[in-house]
Length: 110
Length: 114
Image (cartoon, rainbow over all chains, first blue to last red; front, side, top):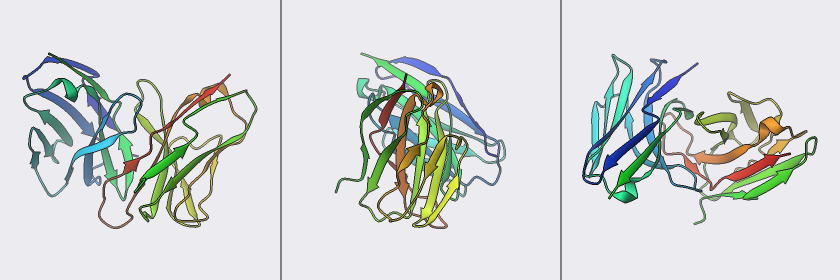
């Protein structure tokens, strides 16, 4: 089955810096790669996703890149703000069955 | 539009007790799933359903049962609670189809088994 690895487990940055979180997956049949943000005491919420037929997608300060050959994908957050502090999860999926990474705790210091 | 609603939010059980975690969605989504979240392990799939009357096992199904009698509801039953089932449980729903779509999560149920 699918296995998703996520790094780093914790990431501390200064406000205004960029943050990068990386994930690798094992199943070449996976074709959907969402990223979720989870704030304390809440359920995960989708922030951006990418499909296997696209190499890069951007939404304001957030971007995701996908390298199908190497089976890895990354989340890039630019101009970080304190409200970006949360736990971020990557996931890989085929036919709606999501397999999650272990999460990255991002701390943005003012 | 409530989205995905989970009840209860918190629960303490004694070892051996049984209980049902409720999940309801009002988005007419065919696909529903249950995950458990443990520190350092991300979210792991327990059971899922692609429509009313159809359920299947995920990665960690032992000790849990599910049923799907309606499109809206997908309850998770713990048959005989064990301390290893102490976790935060999330229900999610999404549109079922050939193309993957956004999964919407509930607020979670924090379960402690003593």
